[in-house]
Image 1 (cartoon, one colour):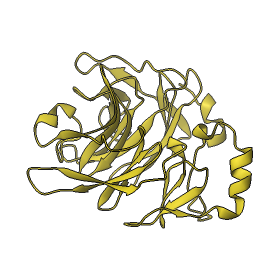
Image 2: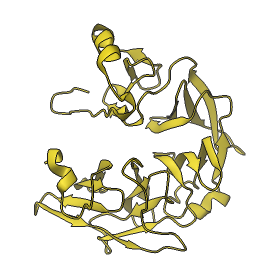
Image 3: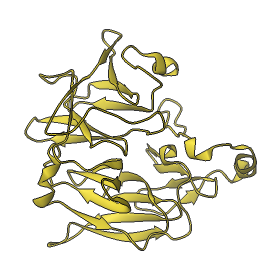
Image 4: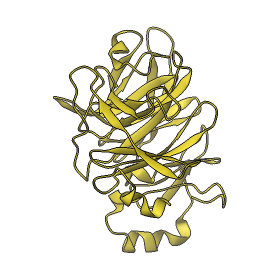
Length: 276
């Protein structure tokens, strides 16, 4: 039913973000977000349910436009003993949802004191944000919460922090957890972050100095690594712990010459066919 997800009940306009939320007991729920609304699908009942917004602090409901695409991360919450879904759109402070099995299953709220950022990922039991667009724009900034404290981003002062990757070329275009590292995609480069010894949380080093990301949402995780559309319009695979390898040389000329609006490209992995 993904083909008709933009007309799912509850969405007031076109879907600008789709993801899958999974509970700790492996119950899976498709989630679709428009500029102003979130809905999740119950496979057992074949019903879409719309999430209502609950104010947490002084934040506002979603207020983005149809071009402010949502990014998502599923993070384990130790107090709830359940996964939560964190969503960002570069316009509003990050939102969280406790999931369809929670007591307040239909509630969407803002993370307390969360940053406004374009991208989000889970790494080292933390919520990691990239491309901060708060009062001042920091396109090369990475912010992370305290370890094991994903729901309340005001814990940044306790075991959390931030880092500006100023040596990178371009803006952050996506964050992706990759085993013992987090990949930080820029327009023209790729960096990687590793857990570091105290008093530092992470160490960031350059992975690829000449290759960047053409389309933020072309990134998809597969059993063989992370696939994405590179800044040269080739499709690449980053094996676990490895460096980018081109996997589309045979069709590169066609992709380069025929693709339009490459920044809107979306990549997915089909587990049934084993294809990206």
